[in-house]
Amino acid sequence: MDRQRGMSLVSLMVGMLMLMGSAGALMVSYRSVVQNGVAASANAKRSTEVASGLLAAMFELRQAGFGQGASNAKPGGAVNVNLVLLNGAAMSGASLAGAAQAVGTTVVSGNALVWDTGINGSVQCSALVGTAAGALLRLGPVPCAQASAWGSLNWGSPTQIITIGAGAVSMQVQKTSCWPYGLAPAASASIPSLVQVTVVGTGTGAASACLASLPN
Image 1 (cartoon, helix red, strand yellow):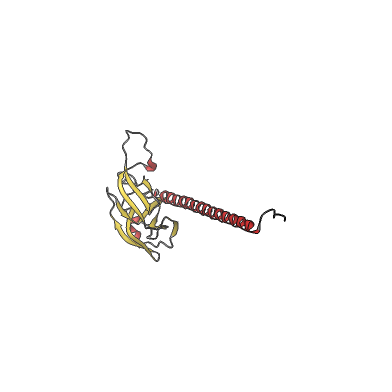
Image 2 (tube, helix red, strand yellow):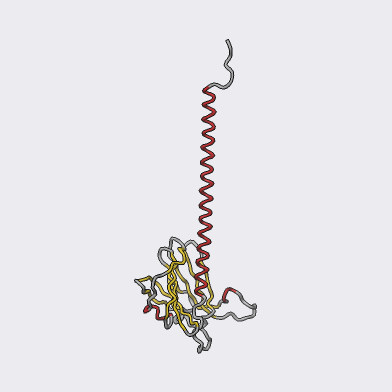
């Protein structure tokens, strides 16, 4: 009687089951790697977008008080006049509602900043508004007398700069000693008293600017 040679049907089926199990494990592993890669890429893109948005906001803010206060003892704008911090700020149609906060030498927080800029004899006002949903909105520029008249201005429709995070966006303002762009010419040089502004987003860090045109 001849012996059966080669693989039996049972052996073949067992081998196929083992291959299928290995293939399934590899697919699960591959899927996990792809998902992690996509998430990392999305987070990196998100961080870049937030950083770009905050950089744009700081660039806008550095115009605050420019061209104002030529007759002042220190030529330039004044905090609480050419730069106003609001708390509880929100849009109501084309108007901006909120409560003005007095800025001094201690840190004061709010969720909106209004500033004016004078160029060629024309004064315009702009604003940044942080929302409870984590968005940073830009208003203006619109013609105005000065930033302290923010409540009577027709702002039109806001432009969303960026959605910073899931939590509220806040602004911290203080009259303090700082150098614009963080650059000091020498260790012995006196540091000017200017306005330091920080925009804070939940879970995304913060961005700061020292406003050179607001020495008063």
